[in-house]
Length: 199
Image 1: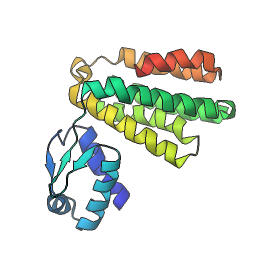
Image 2: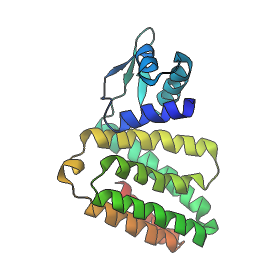
Image 3: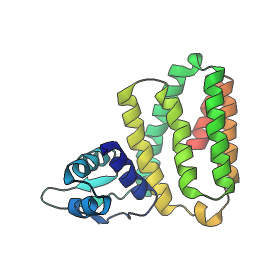
Image 4: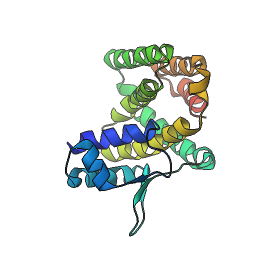
């Protein structure tokens, strides 16, 4: 139950239903979701660790705010570092089965882009990269990546104009190029494509 509540609140934050600076009260969330305050409190703590919610001493919880300066100066460099490490760690272990899984995720991502379903686009984008990170089987590494990527996506959803332009062609192209580079299993091919995609 806690995981589902956590995911529901996270989706609402990243999807923009809950806005930066908006206050969240445990009792209101408990009433809305029809659950006790215990699982709500646990989910809030998890989302605080990911940097999506902020609770100050003796004050209510609010949705975090992520500025462009943080994304450019901290989060993107961290994401590049983490994903580079992960891919180099798993590159020799990648199999046809892994590539098939990535192909399926990419196809779902392309379908979501064609249907202009921004919520699904974001989920499939995260799933694509999370799949690669998860292959390391390093829980702490996965947790670090999740916190960084969640704040980047949160900023994107609240500030980007891509969903107004309805033009995902570059977004699709970058993912296709990245997967093709990964399939070569050659880091010298992957690194420049990954860097361009993140920045």
